[in-house]
Image 1 (tube, rainbow, N blue to C red):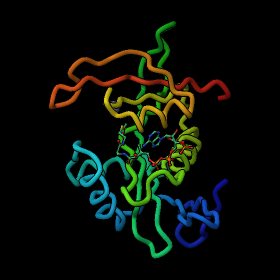
Image 2: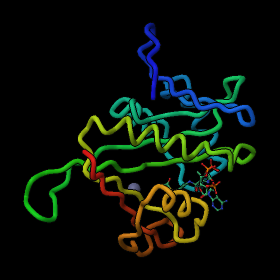
Image 3: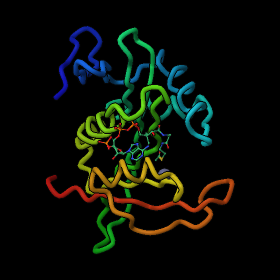
Length: 178
Ligand code: ACO
Ligand code: ZN
């Protein structure tokens, strides 16, 4: 799915059709400003710069950006990997935790989030991910729909998860073909 640029060792995932041209690649340090701009426009959850930087340092392969033809950042996705005890036995397992995803308003509904998720979920498989997990606002119809389309299921509700006290759905997707 990805091709490798030999000079920079960055994976590029080309996703373009005639109608909507965009491409997806790994995030770089220089991209963070653009990522933060999209985040601040699209989501009430803002993070300090060092937070993005540490996610980028620790999980660069699953930190992807979507760019327009003229290299503008129009979307991003970032994940972290958590080691948690499994429910059945005391072995530690790796979970992929979706930290954040957003796409700029004018570029929505073109398949960009879907492409970001599919490519990043593939990329973090190298961590032997047993399960992908995420929280989403119960009112966030478009995001919930997106995750359902990828076969995520609502596992539980986290009451007053957000600062404004909105509840979150805890959604999970078990990785069966590991
Ligand atoms: N209404 C209904 N379903 C939707 C909508 C919508 N407005 N948007 C996306 N979907 C669902 C559909 O099933 C869609 O498939 P379809 O177009 O074939 O019907 C599918 O998701 C894929 O849509 P994409 O075009 O790939 O999604 P898009 O690029 O527009 O991005 C996103 C979706 C990320 C939710 C975008 O609306 C956004 O940035 N929202 C604000 C930020 C946000 O809420 N992020 C998620 C927070 S939770 C978290 O980060 C863990
Ligand atoms: Zn979370």
